[in-house]
Image (tube, rainbow, N blue to C red; front, side, top):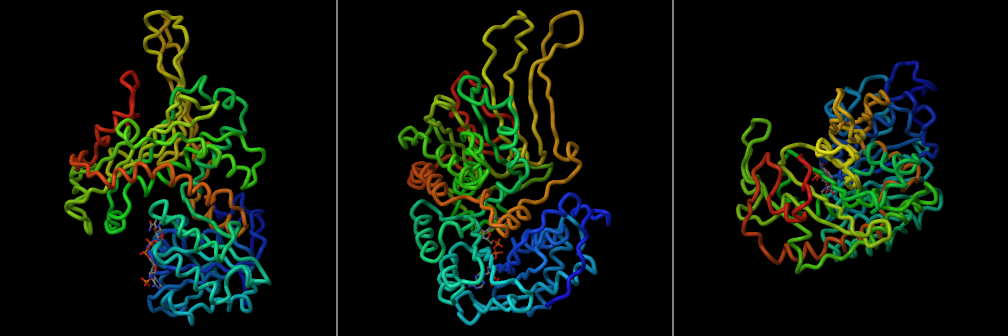
Length: 515
Ligand SMILES: NC(=O)c1ccc[n+]([C@@H]2O[C@H](COP(=O)([O-])OP(=O)(O)OC[C@H]3O[C@@H](n4cnc5c(N)ncnc54)[C@H](OP(=O)(O)O)[C@@H]3O)[C@@H](O)[C@H]2O)c1
């Protein structure tokens, strides 16, 4: 068995990742097998996450990490590549000895095609590193290969049915299907080998600290829940805006678009956390049951009324941070006549006692004026204006949960301007994670891989919710695929998005928050 560097029980060694985490160690020994180990996600996110889990003393004492892809490396070649990736992308900076040398002993590589049964010999770590047949497979490959790999695992006797000695789990990267039919087909193939309790469908948004704080804000405070309903809330806006374009992912994006890439998964998941009823306990299924009930209560969108419920856009050339940037149709691997949307906005209603009549506005887009993910709860107007003329300055109270780049919560409320007159202005009360807790949030993948190793599925999406989210967007998707938008490109890079998205609001509404 490989020697391990002794684990410190406290943060007295000054390691910032270890502070507060020393009791957080995963108990079960575990072998984590990454399919797609030479890929972009592995380099930028997954291997740095594994290293930081080790650095923070979260990995179990006995663990193994296996990379699997076609690129021809031996174990040492793979380790060298992964060290370079950690050095470049890890939040803790360069991997240093003696920790790196110890970590590297747990890392190995299989070079070959996922089609090749000879490559599915992944159990060496059980005898050499003591991982006791506990296996976590991570599918970080092109989605078209998910089914093939699941079949091959089964054939090789590596599925849960054949693993009598330990547990078997599988993390599936997004996207889970490209429409309702393909998602159902993928699910049906996976369930031939894995039961639902073995499957961890990733939505990395759910691993972000501020997203998890939505539940704390709602259910660990007494002041919000009584007003979290149609009596006090006028509308909810959820935004996931980016300044980047499609970069090198034009080929993928041409088969996807903003509705499928962002709204169907990340944004709808945020919506469900905001709109769900209080769960009876914090266990994974209680929370996921409540999210599911909200999705089930979504009012179906009438495709003939689509213009009032959904809007799409595609970016033209423009300027971002004083830099000229090309339009979507000029990006690499993009059809010069592409009709794929890089912006999508949707208005949803939940037909329930809590939410009847409250619109939820969801939007996501690329090449917008700013990078911003937030949830804004806009409260109703005050019922009576006590302070006469000056009270015209009274804005709606707004609670904003900030997800990125700022992480925190901000409440906008009215206050009196100092002086002899009763002048009212809106002010903000802000909580910021960084300054509030004196820590930098860990990247979502660290949290999510650690949770999957522990068997905690709370932050992963259950199949029924994936299916319900596809059902919600399908009427829009089908109409958009059928009818080209002749106005494309219809917003300049660096702008607030297409004007057509304003049609989702009634005339008297304030409209979209500025990005
Ligand atoms: N990158 C991101 O930011 C991001 C974000 C969210 C979700 N995702 C999802 O994560 C997954 C991986 O993304 P990625 O960007 O890392 O993809 P990628 O860079 O294209 O990597 C794909 C990986 O799969 C391997 N592969 C492909 N075909 C194979 C085969 N037949 N046999 C063996 N290995 C094969 C490739 O290995 P070789 O090149 O060595 O053949 C490579 O390691 C995708 O499902 C994607 O949708 C990625």
